[in-house]
Length: 228
Ligand code: ADP
Ligand code: ADP
Image 1 (spheres, rainbow, N blue to C red):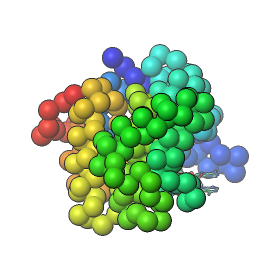
Image 2: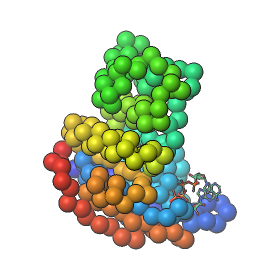
Image 3: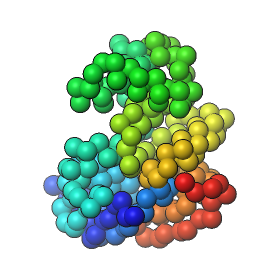
Image 4: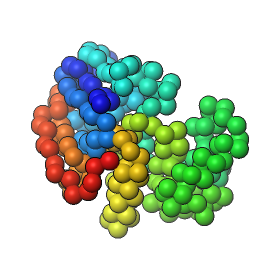
């Protein structure tokens, strides 16, 4: 099943910068895809367009056979930002439940689903903590839990583990793989500057080059873990 297709997608900013030029891509269900390349090659711009936060200036993006807007309305797609963007005044559980609160789901269900995803990321004993009481790795887990709560089909992660120390990064890589395996078909696209991470976590590496931003090379990787 094809979950994402980019067909001749380009993005130029009003100041003339061609952030992405003629990106073509087909992604199947359950793939783990990494984007690598120097700063300014258009990785974030591609993710923003796929997430429906920014509109391409040419070409077409199709998600699960529909538009990016439809995918957003269906909560089919979820975005984990580089820095954990949490509400500092709210508990871990309330931070995680936010997407369901915005959809006005019953409080009881918000709470149950928050408990479920906090368990997935190993934070069920920290539901009542505030973000500042957690380490950087734990805050990133909270962000990941929040992005998983609406059961997205596609998860976008822009350099999720970039700010973490090496040990924490390895732990979170293992956790992500385990969550992905249990998800039975969630597709993950992530940006990384870490070549080991790209090789270890993804089955396909897209190498991007800047000025203009292009997907210039694609590398298939044999993965050592069973595919979902
Ligand atoms: P990264 O390289 O970590 O992806 P950047 O620092 O290049 O992040 O950009 C972060 C955000 O700042 C981008 O997603 C974009 O929205 C904005 N940005 C980057 N470059 C420019 C620019 N030249 N003019 C205006 N906004 C920019
Ligand atoms: P990456 O994530 O690979 O670092 P970006 O997608 O953030 O790359 O940026 C791609 C190019 O587009 C860069 O040259 C950046 O400066 C430029 N850019 C990004 N956002 C904006 C913006 N809002 N306005 C103008 N230029 C931008």
